[in-house]
Length: 541
Image 1 (cartoon, helix red, strand yellow):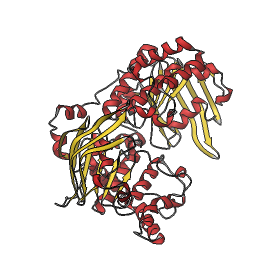
Image 2 (tube, one colour):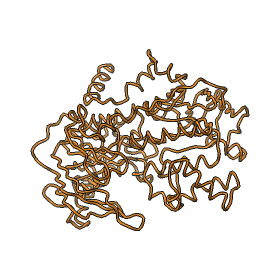
Image 3 (cartoon, rainbow, N blue to C red):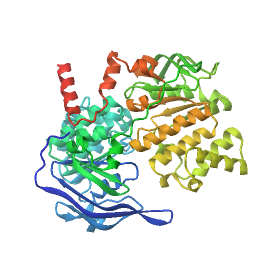
């Protein structure tokens, strides 16, 4: 948790803020009269489940509302100026200058055609805060402070040439470049593996403290917010539930809803005994161009079980999934499914082989066509794989909606009209529409709040039991592994370093790399990050 002592200098004072959003041909209340006060150098954590209004409130702190939203009441005083009353043209003098924003998905926030250094310094140069040479030199220093490799040359790379964790840190440098008074961090580490998350959190906290910047940190991860915030505000359905200092909130939350957030991850799957394998990877190598990324990978997946594949970014988890699906043909080794060796390339596999192996992706936003309705998204695989048409297809779409615990009223909705949890449920229904035997779940809960995560995991476990499904569950969340897995595969730098039952893998003593992963899982202790950083610094020395 931040050790900065906020001054009595109020930077942001929001009173009675009311915001509405337009959907289903009418206006709905999103934020319902919320107050928020933030001093210079203070970090406030905003937590709550999906739809609580966290991101809407965070953006409103900058005087910004998303398309389809409007402010209908209240005030947003930033350094004495009511942003709610300013026209957008004047607000733009603040955006990217005195207030900046760090988004959840760095990959979607950068222009792939421009180098990182150009994007890091653009606002600083545009507002005349520094000239190009000074802005570039400052960016190098920020890269160094954020523990980025080769700080004086990494800016020459394009976004696709750095890892997710590195890109998130570059985005933080971009936000810090103009030396803002306020930064909004909107779920900035959600999609990162645990070891990378520790580095990014530590870097973010250091940079905010160094420049005495005020920040709002939006997250659904309670252990993460405990490391970052001085004060926590809990939201639900657009209303404040409670607010307290981080230590007081962790020690004794007052509201029943807050207590439910604290205890939400109690889900634990009863580990089942291994059966015959439905999938076997034997001696699999894979490469991107000349860069070899998988090395003699052997994995066995028992039929009807859940095998979790864990490891940090770049360990080879998603690459292994791409090999299994045929999207990346292996350079050596075999993939055997239900006793038959699969052709390496997807194009060479039969429709039946494709049907039996389906995939649910991490980012439901980008996995669905934004112009297709729920009816079309779920119906397409029914038609493609099973030849369903007309009434038969329509009935099956409704059955699949019921299976994922959504109503028929969702049929004509577009992805933009769904919450994060609803989008992921639709992606699950689309995978189920093919009537598969084997589903690869690639970080399917990482972008969801903890209550929604539990709902998705419970749904997946129920479907597995009812339909006899087998899951390969790729994740960096150790608590998710404990909740859903029977077997665990630990990967590091393209190698399988440990494999076995969940009980065996999580029983000490641990191999060094497994120990690193487990020790990087944030704890509900505001001093956890400080103690871990100090311990690792001692070990390096």
